[in-house]
Amino acid sequence: MPAIDLSAVQYDPLNPVIAGAPVSERRLSDLQGYFADTAAFEQALAMDDPVLYRVYSLEPGTGEGDLAYGFGVLMPGKVGQEYYFTKGHYHAWRAAAEVYIGLSGSGYMLLEDEQTGASRLLPLTGHSAVYVPGGTAHRTINTGTTPLTYIGINPARAGHDYGSIAERGFRQIVVEVAGTPTLIDRALYAASGRPA
Image: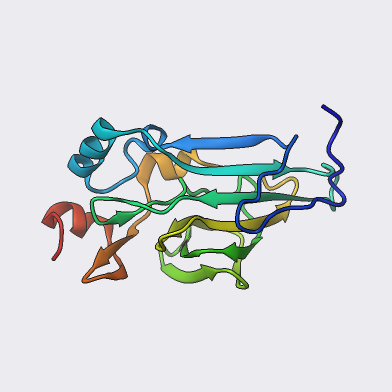
């Protein structure tokens, strides 16, 4: 297969598959321990192991001023009341910021400040953008009924720290309550069971 020209990539905003680009694919089983409702997770996994999301990563260069970018496709669905999401990460180079640009679908970016623990939930939909400051964990959440597609752009040297999130999780989660995506405390949700 010929090398992909990273300086001019064509894509479909509804299904941004980039032929020749490295792709990371995550199935439900890859998110063991990430969902707050472990019983609902085990029940869902016993029925199927669907692909939750794919990210096509593009790194035109690795120099000091270079940017990397990726196209994400996050499927709709829930485990219990919790919407499908990406694992989420910090950047290994904590000072690195990132911009997400929504292409299609509807969802949110969950941001958590590493120093203060404060969380913010920002809409990510087609024709929207979310700025993720340095030192901030971030996760994409699909609250719609169609795939949520987006582009993430960050410094090429940013790197990814998934281990911190795998170890302690996000403090807040997004669940459906009375038909509405709702940000709630993860520990309270896990302790109280499924809120009505």
